[in-house]
Amino acid sequence: MSIEWKGVEKVEKNERHGKPISQFIIWLASNLTIADFALGSLLYGLPILWVLLIVIFSNILAGYIVGLASAMGPKYGLPQMMISGTVYGKKANKIFSIAQWLSTIGWFSINAIITSLALIEIVKIPYYISLLIVTAVMAIIGIYGIDLVHEFERGMSIILGILFAILLVISLLDINNKILYTYNKNVYYSPYLAALVLASVFSYLVSWAPYASDYSRYLAENTSTKKLIIYSTLGGAIASIWTEIVGFAIYLVVGNPNLNLMEATSQIITKNFSILALISIFLGGLSANALNLYSNSLSAQAINYKFKRVYAAVAGAIIGFILAYIGNIIGFSTYYENFLLTLDYWIMPWIGVLIASFYIKKEKILDPKGANIKAIISYVTALLISIPFMNLTSYGIPYEGIVAKLLGGADISYFVSFIIAIIVYLLI
Image 1 (cartoon, rainbow, N blue to C red):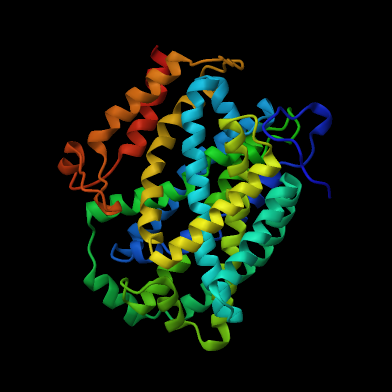
Image 2: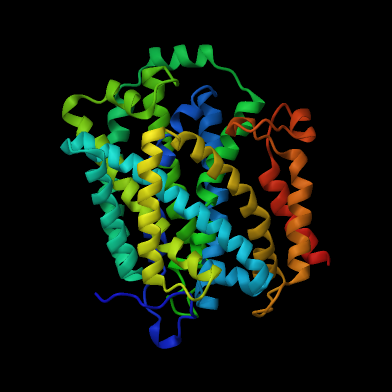
């Protein structure tokens, strides 16, 4: 397997390879992770029926949007941020590329912290050595590029699938009628909590949209759009629903959402099986970070073509290592994760414009050198209109929009900005 020296350049016909099923595998493996698993504590507090409805609905919708983005790859032969540049304009698109670079390096560092801490529990080594191992593995995958990413995720989909299946069985075996009766007796439907859960679950999976075509652009140009959308949707949705239900089941048995994930997991999983949970967290972190680092290198190139993809991957690994090392010392990872989730607000109006251009208007590649005013107006209008619908208090930011207050704290801004962006783009 050779190093992929190609960066954000268009993939030519003679370079195309792979099958549509690869999109199911890559989004399945990358979402069998700690991020979804940890949402169990947030789900705790809603009636069980509402938990199931929200988790299933949010993930299918978010997975579908990722699928729509993924299906653009073969037609353009470009990474997602470069496709964005053909619609928004190369200069204007640098803003979105910077946002994506910040997001990918941020998630890389957070996953590196969690993954390294899990490895320490398995083999009892110092944190800096654990972090070096984790970063080195990711750097190798990032340097070698797309083919190794797909091979790695193929293996992870099998291993993580088995591990999370075992964790689900273990957690469900401890649930009895008494636990269910006590839980249902003490919880009630809360519009605010339901909206918070819906937004959080949705934002985790939909945050992959700016990555999506990075992993489909090598497929043949005539690859079925429908197949790509279905495979991508199912891969992401199945993995996220699966792991989030496992996380919820663990907290349901423990009965204390204030415990962190490892504390809650250790209470119901015996010593013989605790290693499975640690291995799942470790491998899940690696699986997600393979995509974070690779897409980070492409985002760096989208900002400035002078950055070579291979060297950008090395730089991203070094910066991610430094952030993860400092972050573990000062304990800022929770706050940083909240900050990254607030970054997700930029994604929905951005992808709304791309979907309107690609799927509804069926525009040819626009490729404006500067800025596509129509796209920018649509994006800014949608973002501004969505601000009154935002509620950022759950992320530690003291802002609750006027409409969000009227809705009992419910934040529906993601959906508002997405729909408005599409409508404005079609009307201008």
